[in-house]
Image (cartoon, rainbow, N blue to C red):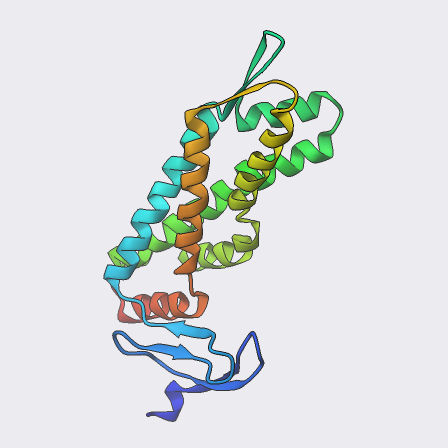
Length: 210
């Protein structure tokens, strides 16, 4: 192995030193100490699968925000609840910090995160030197901890348990979109590898693909 193609790094979990290198098809780098997957070979077929999943995530995010999640009935007073409905209710009740937190964590940041991921994967799948692809990669990496839709789904379930003691709860189609979005976003991020995608992008730009 050419020494110029290798460099030594530390495992993010156990800090053990390993030799980073360019991988061949089907190869992975696994930490010999803790077993963490350090790097995985990426090719167009894998990018295409993840791109399809992220496209589904964006569709689910859109549908989750325009369809009601639950209908809450208290003594004949019925209210249809969307994600944005909760944000507006908190805002008008004076809980604007909480309203902003819900808006950014459940609407804006997931949209920015998934849109950046979609753009990044499009560049990789089509092997095009799209402008801003490296910025999109950094954006996806930075916003990964803000992928809170799984947390939002669990919080919705917990809230419904409490609300059920006060009135009648009827689940609507929006709840299904939230659940599918939570699961699919977890699957998509399972395949996100900053180092491997960065290497793939650099290869595209180095080869001069247009």
